[in-house]
Length: 174
Image 1 (cartoon, rainbow, N blue to C red):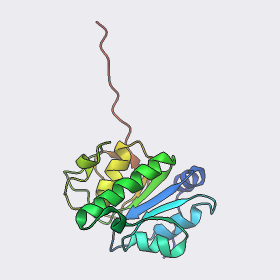
Image 2: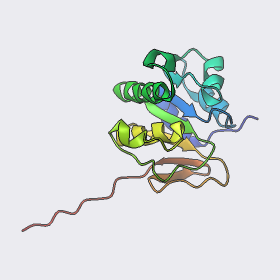
Image 3: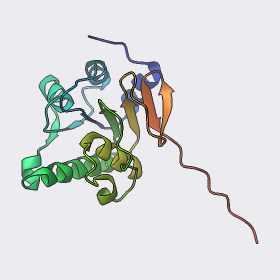
Image 4: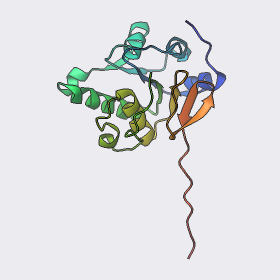
């Protein structure tokens, strides 16, 4: 099913020097195809090696694929792959589009330290997203109806979220 993208999402994709896609291994959001179509062909696309969202993106376009097998064996290889993916996206000044299918585990919070985000809470999509936010990578997140956003995301437009601005720090003058 093809859905038109909201204007703020189209604008962000048009301005991004690189775009990374991540999300559910089993459910492919109806927003994935129109988002991918909105990325200019000259812009590099980064993606992982999993099924679901990753596979849909890989099958539709030439991408820089981050393969877990290049980072060892077992579950740790997927976390290491995701850390490398986010760091490469950050180094390119890119934007992360994330399409999780369920809620964020309470233990997953943004941090520039990968070990904080990849804490074994069971969601690589949310861990990658939290690490991207903690690393200063701009993010766009499409959540399915009924899935609540964590407090560290702010609404952009219906169905879409961005990283919430950091709380202001008030300095006291002595």
